Length: 439
Image 1 (cartoon, rainbow, N blue to C red):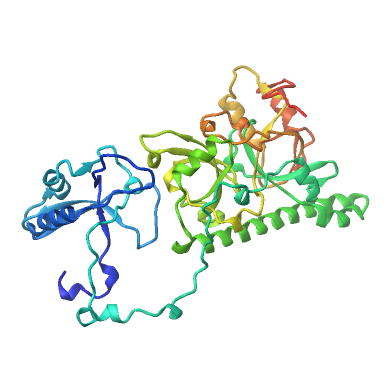
Image 2 (cartoon, rainbow, N blue to C red):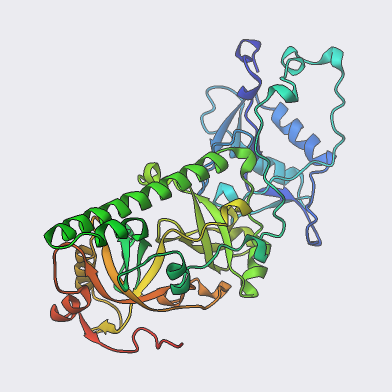
């Protein structure tokens, strides 16, 4: 690097050649291969042959703002500025170290490329030869104090389980109001009558005022109390989202989950939770770091290429992510039960086919409003545990799904949504649909 370009040490960005790894004849659990001295020497000799190099960064399915992360690259040696394409450094390296280096053709995502250590002796630093910037690093007590994440090697034990929400919990916490439950629907995650998501509203702090009045004013006060309950629930959720942003926004508090441990835990039927980064247009409202449950996995060639289906615990909905991109969740964020609950309408089934028609889905989506409270009755809860084979299961077969009926949107309408679905010809009554409830 030209001296004129050497302003700051972090202008030298760590990179790693993509699709290469040290050869390993026998795979041993938890023992990672290392680059040999010969590997390093050969790569240095190859790079010395070229005056310039052209670098192509490999895209990651999971974005990262940690400048300590290695950027995975394809690198091309250029003998001059006129050499537009260049020669692949990776291919030269693999040819020179044939049978000593593996070339992984199936890698396409930068996240799946592992970083391997070198077995070469570490550089011995002498103070007299150190650059000025190495001598002026801040001492430890001058740096910002970072919250140290406690050891969570037992990430799949009961100590880090997030409490489930069922009818008993809702009743104990005061969410039952006048014999029913009020919820705020997460409209963008409404899929069908068999899969929608809502956050319970607590009316306990407002009911005394509303019950103390009689006549016409009582209805007006009740509407105000419902609005206040929605605002209070949104504020509580926003505060929790900000807490997650502050904690996991710092690289020191982020650690990737162990894919092998997840597989073992799901095989045992244990529930597994984690943290994922969200960067869609709703992230400014929902937070960039969200709690999720890993519902099931889809096998790949190796554990780092497994995909998993996750359920967002606080804002509802599901997604498919690389298992190797999920972060470990800190136990301090496992205390609060999920804010948003997955629900399924019970006692109805599609009028014609086994699946809900697109018209039925659109009607249900438009009628199940998210700007006003919704009253409903809870008739059961799916208490099934998790498992790796729940990746492609029916939505209502997932753990902790609440089965509901008599859905009443509190927008002035007098007919329940159940009845309207039937009148519109989208559904028919079926007492044991989608599943038969047991006590």
